[in-house]
Image (cartoon, rainbow, N blue to C red; front, side, top):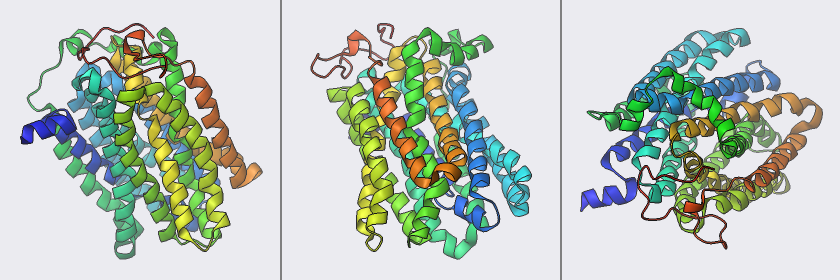
Length: 430
């Protein structure tokens, strides 16, 4: 009975351990998300300096994300995750012992950047393993579970832990405590490949030449490239918010704790809808969920997230509702993780590298937009740039159609996978 429950919810016992480990690992990664920017600004950096720091971090994450898929396919998930763990631990130690105490941007940038190389290799390496392990007909649910644990650790548990730990430990000690969660998560997750062997497909592609697939796949399969752009837009605003929204909220009367509660609400709702949209998309179609609930929904709720707290400064409930609505729509991009490998079934790892590149680039693009436009356009202008990006993503989704073998009916435009399809089912080229 227990085994049946595990297989029903987590696909397999190995994936269950991986999911649990990723959640704990990302809890350590996400400790500083809601408060590091205002802390740095309070200690002498400008908002542009903070945006630059987060942008460089995001650029390094984008590079690691790009190659995480093909590296995991060539060498296996476990070695890639181990490398990610090592980079994160070393980068964190250098940032906290050398970079942050100096409050010198030239010292903070390289050490924080090294830290940014770590988590994509760990988390997205595991995501590629999910793409191969999960049956195709349950791929939407499987990736929904991944984003559930990813966001749950990164932006809910980590943020809530910070809100509790900061008054007692202070900023620096709270950041050091992140290493405990990262190490614990790695111990749990790295059991997923214990004693495992590479698949035939991995053995066939185990060469450095295959690494270039992480670049050329976007040109061989143009829809994969478009999907990477949509994924970049997906969380750009969310990563940009942490740079300037805490300051905006505090300027209109909210405390740091109030902001952390808003941010935690956003991601708590997000992880619930990660599961829901993953399951629903397997039934009614992947593309329409992304297009309407993700792209259009985020365009609307981005505006609400910014304006509602300003119109109700004395009541936190409307602000929490607006942040939760944005988090729910953000989750509707989850089916992209099922769409991308379906567009290149013979090169799933390379296709996932483009998806992961988009995820990494979003951590660069979001803060970069703040750094470039906050001085000239202000916070309001930045919000409307993010809104326009979401609407542009909706237009791109019109052209990202999945193979005909995955379509249920014309009424949905695109649908769940046929139950008879297997793990490595041949699909039409996207």
